[in-house]
Image (cartoon, rainbow, N blue to C red; front, side, top):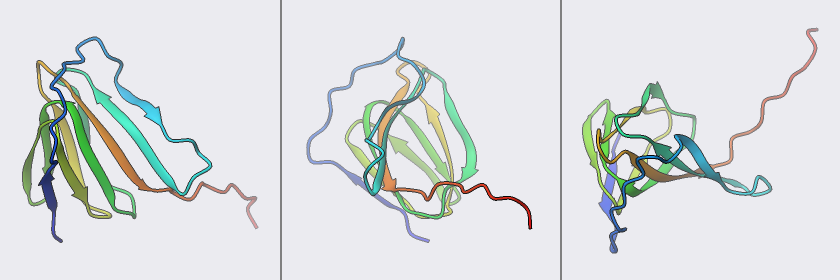
Length: 119
């Protein structure tokens, strides 16, 4: 499994979002073939370790700072950084204790769950 980490050509301004809400703060209209979200983590916040979905995810760090822990090591997250997360990879996001972390996430739309009656 390879990880692809690249710095963007233009760096975003480094604005802290100390009082900003946590979680998904923006989503792409659901009528498209892509899912896209802006995820905000408050200072010291985290997304606990988990195995990602069965699809690749691309993130672009917008503001703040933090770290992405993977099965291959830790990746520093700073504004402008672009990271590709392979499908089914382990990941844990940790926001900076003072600045928090805000990033844009995009991936192919996940198929919705279908509820059916038992046979």
